[in-house]
Length: 228
Image (tube, rainbow, N blue to C red; front, side, top):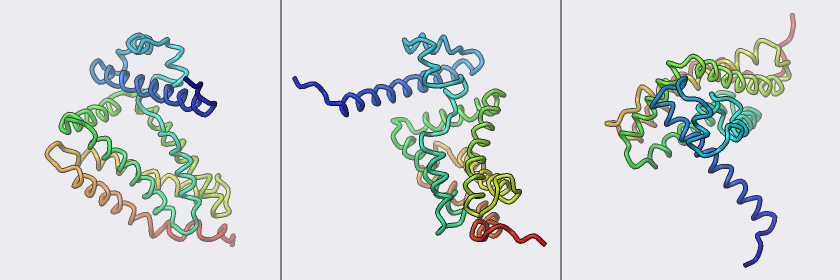
């Protein structure tokens, strides 16, 4: 039997890493939902997964990141979308949010029991809402996205990231993320067809975006404001 080439070995290694990440996240979230975030230790998660606590921390730097983390490539995708000069910052953010909504819809479609999957999503969000450590971690993730958006918008407009315009623009755009999360929870129901949920969530986000678009459509299309 021929030995796998370098590419095959690397591919196998990456698959094993992805499988380990999925195992750790799935196990941890299930245990957190059953017993509460604070009641479950990383050592216990490692024991159930038959790995060492060090292995857990090699994949996830904190216990909170087992629950909440930025999807791979999200910051790069956000930056790339905001760098496109042919679209407004609002349209760029909508493209990112549509992708995240599609990911949720695909995950729900793939579940064998839709009602149970909806319940799991609702319990997951309730756990975040009711756990101070997770709320704080969630805010840190939003800050990371806002910082990336601010830097990109500032460069695009010929401003400094310390200027007020890119700072408020980035904060406003990230507010659309909060609108999408809240709308998803409001519309997601085991009795509502999934495609209808998607349409209603997307419509809510676009209603909010319409309020921003007038103010942000010209932003980043011109250079720094002229000083009087």
